[in-house]
Amino acid sequence: MERLGYQPIGEPAAGFEGDQELAWALERARPGPGGVGLARGEGGALRWRVVFPGGGEVQVTVDGLVWSLRRPVPSAPGPDLFPSLARARVEAAVAAAVPDPAAWRLVRAQSWREGGHTWERAWFVGGPGPLPSGWRRELELEMAGSTVLSWRRSVHPLGTDLGVVTGRMAELRLLRRPAMLGLAILVVGVLVAGAEAVAYRESVAPMRGIAYGLVTAFAGSFAADSLTAAPVQGVVLALVVAVLPVWTDLPRPRLRLGPAAGVALAGVTLVGRAVILGTGGWAPVTSPVAADMGVGRLLAESWVPALVEEPLLRGALPALAAPVVGWWGAALLAAPVGALLHPVPSVPVLASIGLELVLQAGLAVVARFAGVGGAVLARGTYEALVRRASFPVGSEWDRVALLGVAVGTILLLWPRRRE
Image (cartoon, rainbow, N blue to C red; front, side):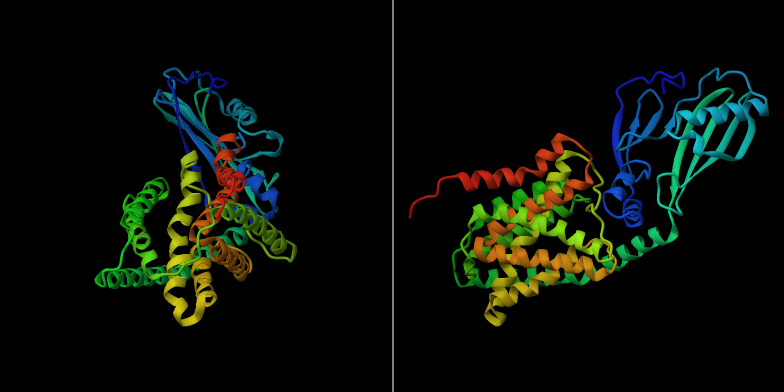
């Protein structure tokens, strides 16, 4: 803005803007780290919007590329330019907007009179540049008089790349419905079993349930998109945890095994994605982009799925189904439910679901030998490490992602109590 002759006033407010479909389309068009780098830079899928209270705003990609800029209209924007001079001035202004001005060409221009000044608006096309073949970069630049007021970049993806991603996301949202129905049936079963236990005057663990419900509701308040989701999750989990010890015979918790298992599962996921890419398929490297890039968002979105889903899938479902199909049979029932809750688009679609099934089977093994508490720590550690790739570079996000690893290290080094 200062290069345009405007001094911003006031402390700016920054907010994150992410285009999930565009980010994954870039990863599909250029698999691996190259697509991730494009999403953070020339692809413009991950941006910060900085708004100044005194007027003016700018969008900057995560890698620091100025994506768009707008300054207030000055009272004296300078003398009007003749058409020939205006074109030269507009083309020269492109050098301030893009790092490779020689690759851009003017395709259309518009002039009009407003407020006693001549306004110019020009559209430039930059070709694919560093983007994959078939993609296109565009730039719209606006001037009043002889002053550049704004520019805005945009990316037009290849139809097949974006179409495959959006279509696959729609398919997976449809597949997620039976998994949500399965969880709802499971919660009803837990509540019926809990009511039966109370009717027969068996002891319950209300304080444990209340504490767990409060932790879940507090964490969910940072991750949930609606204010009603976190309290509902907290109440449901409070009831489940309160009645779970009454009518179940679950393995004893061995918390020290959980975080180490989470690190191992994160490694399996990375290897699995590499195998999918190596065999000609595609799976995105990054997990879903969070709507809010705060540190608390990464912490909440990593641990809320563990707090909510693991007591149900690794505790309640095996307890309800074990008398009929055995413990491992119940674990196999929980695996497809968990796999359909959080799949990411892939080609073929079975690749993503298969990778999630491997994760769910691993969590079942953890729950068998480390209890539900160990499964919660494993899932939270795993989610934090995998989701870290969707956040910008920064030590604060690194510390949050490694929180589970730090807890696991302390638990492993803590002296064991003698029997």
